[in-house]
Structure formats: structure tokens, C-alpha cells
Length: 339
Image (cartoon, rainbow, N blue to C red):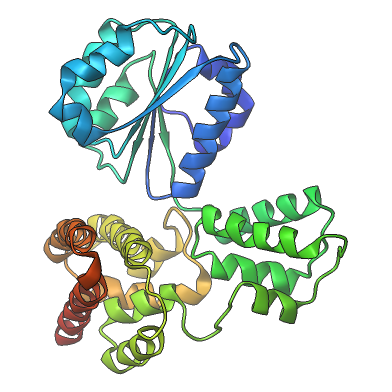
């Protein structure tokens, strides 16, 4: 069964009666919010609930151990919350087995990245009436503004619309990033309920020209001179390779969706204007250029290369910055040769 993310809060108690959930998509912050909402609501039934977290790889490497966690009793609690991270089609059979013999005292939450329509895992959760599939797409500008205003209002902090828009821009369309910045403001404000935009810029380390989002966009557009300029600025500071690869992956997935709908009967501008999630107006010209540059085959290949590069960075932390920049530079050169 498919449930929209915005419906979850209204139906939380009823949904928990089913207890089988897949949260998939590029919106890490939204998945975290929904996961915590389910955990908190489920915990109201039993304060001593046990929470167990697994990654797909460790489950696949030892199925029996995982089944024991599911079906064995606990000395300390009568109920369990089982969270599976990085779920893919490979775990579908195990999920199916548990579904067939599902114990009532278990809440199972599977967290996945972007899943295609033909995904077996996604189809399982969509087609079974006792399972819930919740797509978690990127927040648009309006969503993030509402989140910011709500969080600030809770703490009686007043910021101008210009300042809120700055926070939204800095978030890179990720509510988790936005909430992190708001947490800084809450800690800074103490008894001060009104803070100026210059103070906010200083507090969130805002560099108006060179942001991670800009770097990735320039790379995908093949704008070598701008790309090199930004790289030279951020190289001397700390580069969060995993965060940048997450941004790159989100943008490529978005291009894939648009390209898959791009036929002779479709206008590219219309595809971009009506894209879900909505694309910020400032970014639309860049997205159009990227759609014209990249083909479906290269975009799909790039998704696999991102995963391989991330793994390589984790295995070689001392060389991770060099590995990542070489990978990004290769993409930029390729885009430039196409444009």
C-alpha cells in the first residue's frame, strides 16, 4: 500500500497497526523524521521497547542471526523495533519470509535510497495490503520555508523572510541540513529572540558564492573554469566527500527522471517546470543544460560510479579527498566534451 509522506502524521496510529514500512527516496531528513515519528508512537505502547538496527549487508551475510533477532523473545521487553538501513532488492526474499510469519510485537522499518518502479522491494511493499510504502522525495522551497518557520516559532525566534530564504538556500534542499542550522541559531539566541541576517551568515558559515550545490551544478554542466575556481577555494578547507556525493546522486536521479519522460511529444521546459519534487527557479537553466548534455546510459553508469567511489573513499580515508576530486573532475571534463 502506498501512503504519501504528508499523510503519515495524520494517520500514524492507524498505520502502526500494520507495522511493516518501507521509506525510500533521496530525502534523508524526511525519512529520519518519519522513522522517529513511528518509533515514538510505537514506544507509547511499551516504554521498554527494544530497538535493533541492521544494515542489509550484515543481514545477508548471516540470515539465521537476523531471524533469531526477529523471532526470539527478549528478557527486557515485549516488543521490538527493527530498522534496516540501505535496503535494496537483495533483501526482498527475507522481508517476504518475515511478512508470511510476522509476529505482532514487531515494528519493521526498511530505509532505502532511490528505487525504480521495477524494484522488487518497492513492488512488494506497494502490493501487499499489510505493508506500507512511503516515497520520500526532496523537499521543495515552500516545504523548507514552512519547516523553518515552524521550528523558529516553537522557540519564539523571529527572523526576516530574507534570512529564512538564506537558511533554505544553505540547506541544499535537505531538511536535515536545515534543522542543523536552526539548532545552531537556537543555541546562539538564548534570550535573544531577534537576530540579524549578518549574524546568521556568520553563524552558519555562509559563503554566498561557493556552495556545495553550486560546485556540483557547475561540474554537471561542464563549466571547467568555474568548477576549477570553486575547487581551488574549497580544497584548502574541509571537503565532506560523502555529503557532496549525496548531492551529486540526488541531481543525477532527478536528471534520470526527466530524461525518461523526454520524448518528441514532450517539451523540456515543461518537464522541468512540472518536475516532482519542484526545482528551484534559480536552478532551472542549469538543469535544462544538464538534460541536454547527458544521456540516459551515462547517467545510469554514473550512479554506479558514485557508489564505487564512495566505497573507495571509505576504504582509503587518507586519499579520499584526491579520489573524490579526480572523480568529480572526470565528470566535469566529460560534460564539457559533450556541451
